[in-house]
Length: 325
Image (cartoon, rainbow, N blue to C red; front, side, top):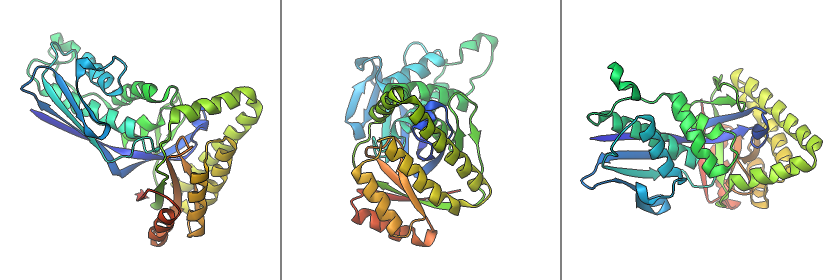
């Protein structure tokens, strides 16, 4: 028996941080990077997890109860009412840089939930809790995958918005407001985004907590900033849907200045943003939690390579060129 699942990375186009305070955000999948999980039968007793990228080689029961990967496995097993525990090898790999704003943790969770669900459905005698009704096994739905992954995101980030797990689960551009139904939106005309990685780990939990402290000290000021970011996100969605992505450039520049006011940029991010603009990008901003991680730039397709080169020259550790469609 074997089962395999993959999940893409993601970038936030607009709305990071404000999304935690119930303002809208736009996010899109990045398929050039992905997390992959393969589940296999094991001759050994137990569930053995191998994730070389984070130097994890352990049996499930040896992990603490709140371990992000262990928690995913236990939740899926409980959801499918599997007993006793099967003997499995779980192999996890990812090309998504960790702590860079590309959704590495959420992608691993989504791929793990789906691969385990598929693997466990193949094990003879494993059924849904309603097995007494004679119903056949049904795979975990996207909504359930999203819900499970969000619970795991809380272990990574404390008070996450839920946007990472949502865009990665559905693998579609999403318009997201916390606590409201997900809106998948259409791209009227493809456009090119260049992603530049500072190489500095970006701990979303810390930046989110810092912004919260600032908001508590001066709620009116920061609510005003969040409202401006919300308006940008709304205009950006309309521009994308109407096939006018070139309008996103100035919106990115404005959004970045607001994120600077939220204190979540950094000299390294600002340097990359300036370098992208000087190389001909239509606009640029940080993406994600900030203080490190990634920035994004809107570029005409013909200029994307030169923008990427300028980012490397300005200190980016890696770049990704992705087309949003």
